[in-house]
Image 1 (cartoon, helix red, strand yellow):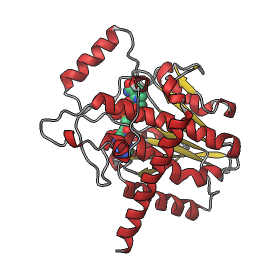
Image 2 (cartoon, helix red, strand yellow; image 1 turned 30 degrees about the vertical axis):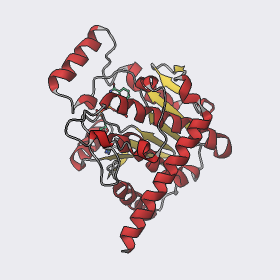
Image 3 (cartoon, protein in one colour; image 1 turned 90 degrees about the vertical axis):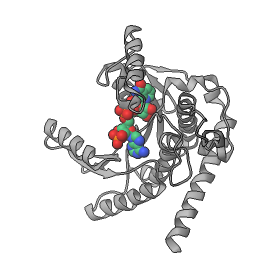
Image 4 (cartoon, helix red, strand yellow; image 1 turned 135 degrees about the horizontal axis):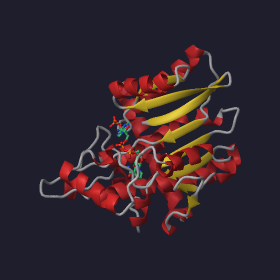
Length: 297
Ligand SMILES: NC(=O)c1ccc[n+]([C@@H]2O[C@H](COP(=O)([O-])OP(=O)(O)OC[C@H]3O[C@@H](n4cnc5c(N)ncnc54)[C@H](OP(=O)(O)O)[C@@H]3O)[C@@H](O)[C@H]2O)c1
């Protein structure tokens, strides 16, 4: 799920977005059972569909308008992510994991930027990345590369490189975060953080055969590397990134207790990050044009 909040008469109004309306309503109920006076709204969004993000944008603006609230967002947490086991092409022509983990959050953040910029209090974007970004030693900035399109994997015999694709998506999200920080922090006061929860026992491996994921989790547990989602070190990194002072913008939060570490050397390459964001913006513009053409045809 992706989370963000709006300041409403000094109360915090939390928004949850997710793919499944049932999961969203269960999550809202669970939060309300713990905090009955929580201001919380849920919107259905599929990050691997540009149409779905646009639909969400329209509903959100309508909702803000109807509620007579300040047109702003203070905090956006791009948490949603997946580990796909096979090559699947979305309706927008992207590899599903690439669109869900990188292009989707890139588009959503850009769509919400006017609201983040409009905030009367300093606003923030938190992107969830992964230690696995360190495995990336080069990146393919061609449109095809960013779409994750690989003709060899369309064939029945081609095996999908799920680990390297996941690492690449998380690396791109990290580079985008650093570039967004450089573009926005000084000029508009928006802070941009990345959070790495470490190895956590969640549903991230749900697509893998159960025997494989349980072996992986058992080995990680034996090595004392596996954390539970509620552990201070796991959720702590995300909370730290959300609550740190704005001066910490551009940092990589890992390990909880406010700890920040350096990410891979390559992730600090400014030229590469600029090119990545420029190419991603081109893809975003293409999605906008295609949607417009479909709407007018
Ligand atoms: N677990 C780890 O060890 C680990 C380590 C480093 C980083 N991370 C990152 O932490 C974040 C959270 O993952 P997790 O470990 O909590 O895994 P998870 O339990 O599988 O949660 C992933 C969430 O993303 C949502 N999601 C997936 N595809 C989506 C889409 N197309 N549109 C909207 N929402 C979508 C899922 O929604 P549904 O419930 O509808 O499927 C689910 O709520 C991810 O970004 C992941 O890459 C995890």
